[in-house]
Length: 245
Image (cartoon, rainbow, N blue to C red; front, top):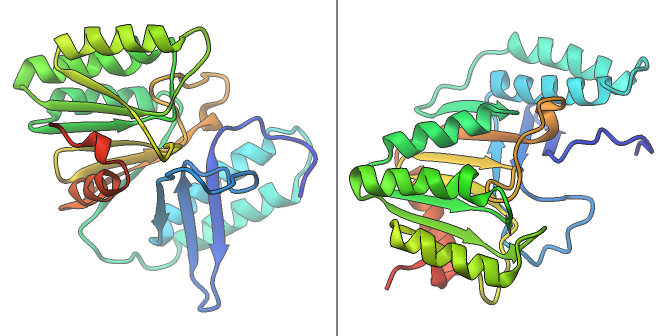
């Protein structure tokens, strides 16, 4: 447990198993402070090459402290060893996201979505309109995509009355802003149609990536048949307010 912060908002786990495999987790959960009362979304990754990429991100984060760092050295060695291991065969396409890679994905999916775009963000802030709402409006107007933004808290200079006004304006342009009810959401995700899911630590609707700290938020995009549909079905069970009347 280090006293020097990496200043990152990323939520990462790296685990070695009794079988000799390594797992990585990328998501939204503040593992060291969460009371586990909110909905979190995390992707567990098993392919050695992908886990190696997570190790490299951890290496860069702890290496920023400017001194020789045992953990950074260990992560460098681990990533090298993992890349020598055989890949796990499977149909998923997996991409890790850092920094402005998040912005690129949001622009891409708003232009590619055909039927449904569901975005989760713990907070709704001053960057919601340029960062998310406008992208959703573009998708809704381009192809009548069903766009939903799920959030829990209006933050920063944005007050509840501003959030209601933003929701009214967005609804007029085909985007539903849905505030959670009984259970808050802390998960950050983008589910596109049925087969494209991004899970991250970035609050899409209240923050933007830091160009001086690309690893400040880390996400993973998974393209796999049915994965986005499966995630949305689980989330709708937890948050029925998501379901369109």
